[in-house]
Image (tube, rainbow, N blue to C red; front, side):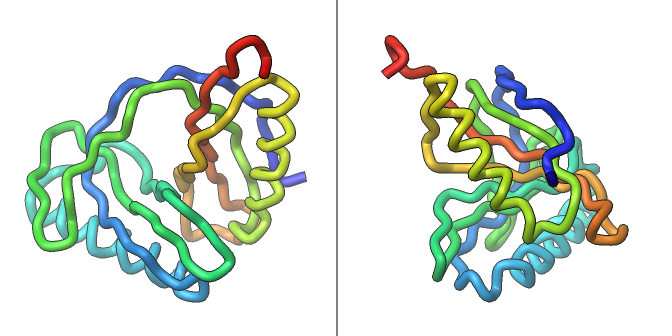
Length: 158
């Protein structure tokens, strides 16, 4: 099983950073994520700001053909952005989270588990999700990803 932690419902504060938002065909997803990370790292180096967290990707929508994503880094100080790099604010709220270990191609199984957990515990989601990549440059089997989805508690368990 690729999930290596328990489920956690957490209250997350608002956080700021910089990101690149893109709509890409599914077949180009990995290349776009890598390209965005490289551009963001270069931009932050250029303006003298260090990331305040690991690289993240927020998936606004995901289909079998295309993906609407926002790839970025949190920052401790405000960064103005330039060209396609924009300042972003990650919203505060309740999130369901867990830790995944393994190849990124195995992450969809965790999302299916999350759907079951949400139903069993009377929560719903906005349809967005976020993945925070906690390590890189390791064997695929050793990749560690934190998965978060914003959630809402269903009133009266409905």
